[in-house]
Image (cartoon, rainbow, N blue to C red):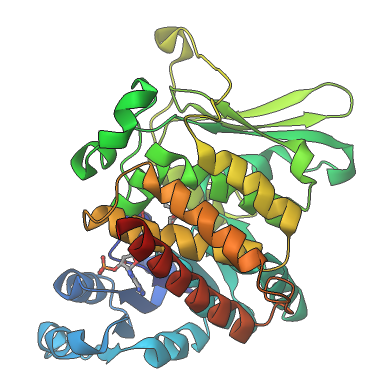
Length: 391
Ligand code: NDP
Ligand code: MG
């Protein structure tokens, strides 16, 4: 029986890597739903190639274009948030969560509610609503598998181990586009400069988040939520070669490292075939040729996002949701040229401080409604902070 699978965020970088793997063994999979955003022609092409049951764009105004691109194919077309949730509720065995941003949360929860195994590339899901997501998975007997390369590495290093024997978890960071820049140049960093990653090919937003290390900040929080370890047990190590993705340190002093090429098809394929290991089309490392791997501590003055992640974990509750929403909004503003590169962290810090002053907000119970409302509120705070700074 082919496995029923759906891919949310199919037109993005993770989505395309997932499709690359699926398309190598089409007989093994029955594709239920593919989702995308603005890139509807690409979405339709993949839906036809993979014989999907339904293709969904997140945006209502893209429906006509999607319908035209699918005309005569027999594939259903749908658009909008409700359609996205309905598609996520269609019975599937395995669902890839690869929408970018907090927009990925609700479809991921809907997939868990129907008992699907959720392969989680969308780190925002755990940052915004870790407790809710883990409880939903447990209640519905659904498995949650990490796809972020560091978290897949940790997950693999923990196979057969007891989490109580873990002393520390080290996630590595390439250092992003500006790792070798003098700090005083960062203020003037341009969008084009921030959008080039030295090692990984990824979507634009996560590439910029790598340059600011907001991506690593989200991943530290993701580590805490996924593996249930204490914030003090999580370390970040700059490793410019991006070959070691994470290390798990145990109470006997052993450090288990996951080493592999920077190719997301490893982590995606691991989640796709779990609990088996199957052959994957990724490069086999020749360590003798690579010769040396290097490491150094991150400079917190260069990467204020890492300090903010510590505050967020300390605060708990909905602080992760506020942090992510403010980050998304300031990233929008940087992409649109309204604020500078260093201002992103300043805006996020300001929003966290202001919302902290609003009694009860961050400690509200973690329901989907509260998370979505808090996300909305934090975005409007971020807009207000940016308007004030500009004035
Ligand atoms: P991309 O920007 O490449 O792709 C994002 C996907 O989400 C596209 O399919 C896009 O559609 C869709 N999308 C955009 N906005 C919305 C929205 N508002 N509602 C619904 N769908 C939307 O992102 P990546 O693939 O790089 O990243 C996806 C997720 O995976 C992120 O959470 C990221 O942090 C995480 N991740 C990515 C890695 C990578 O290597 N790229 C590594 C580890 C984690 P369209 O393009 O059609 O507009
Ligand atoms: Mg990562």
